[in-house]
Amino acid sequence: MDAEKLKEIIRNGESSTLEFKETLTDKLPIEKEIVAFLNLRGGKILIGVSDNKVIVGVDEKELKNIEEKIMNKCRSVVKPEIIPIYETIFVDGKYVIVLEVRGINKPYYVFKDNRKTYYIRVGTTEREATREELGRLFQALGMIYYEENPVYNSSIKDLSMDKITEYFEKLRGVMFENLPEEEKINILINSKILTNRDDKILCTVSGILLFGKEPTKLLSQSGIIYAYFEGNEISGHLIDRKELNGTIVENIINICKIIKLNLQRSSKIEGLERVEKEEIPERVIRETIANACIHRDYTIYGAKIRAFMFDDRLEIRSPGVPPNTVNVESMKTGISVYRNPIIVRFINDYHLAEGMGRGIPMIIKEMNKISGKEPKIEVLENETNLIIYFPKRK
Image (tube, one colour):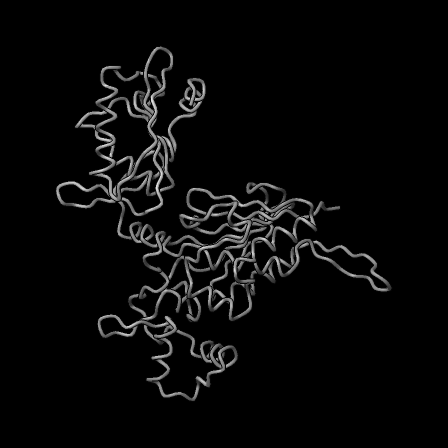
């Protein structure tokens, strides 16, 4: 990195991926910041820059000592250990240390006094992770699946046995209704719809989301919010708003109907017939919504999937960011890592998703052909946004 690039970065100020540290001492350690960045998506720490963007510099005699301290901390205090990218930049007659850290072995923690402390980055600050946030870190690593967790204060009575019976009889060929109660419960436990915890039969998160009578009653983060705005900005007049609080399957089917009702249609003559065409094919709408339901992060409480329609586009905002090994470019090629494999299996059984990573490539191909503009995927701090542009309206 050259001096001009560094000055540009400093002018932009601190962010979720950039930290300024005026100095580094035993009373002002750096391991907390390193771990917090690693548990997000990596970042840079500039040593020799004050919080108000002033380059104060690092004493040239201290450069070697600081480097040794940082490398030792990255080996002995930061766990799993990392090898950071370390650089010294001479700018405006002063030395600034640029430390860049990235890692794929989440979750990372500070190991001191025989204690593990997990830190996360929130905006421009870092803090110790809560139990729920720590669960998300382990989930990101694929060590646990949140959807298998029990929903406390739930029971089999919170599930719709009619929906479960219909699923097993129509899609699995199991004559579920006529089975003894004990066998039904065993099937539901093996299917991860129920779980046995401390000799209590409880619903799992996936069980409530897929077959719950009132999913939002037990899981506030379930459901989809739909809003249709006049114009192309969220500040525009709200034309329509609906909230869907059914099961995942019901929500996918019903939100697709709502979106279709608000699409414009065009027609053209093909052969001897007039053929009507919508701005977005039903297959694309269904895949977009199903994809959001399958891949969203259900550990983020109170956050629902949001479907926003504007005059020029449809946005599907799904809580959570992709797992460690997945980025926007890999999603476009069909690479996916399942955060919720149980939900994926059931949604595939209902034939509501393409499966095998074909969904995003299909959406891109179809909408490129129709609108001439490639759908956009945005990975924001706490959500993933899929934007589908309409063809030019007349």
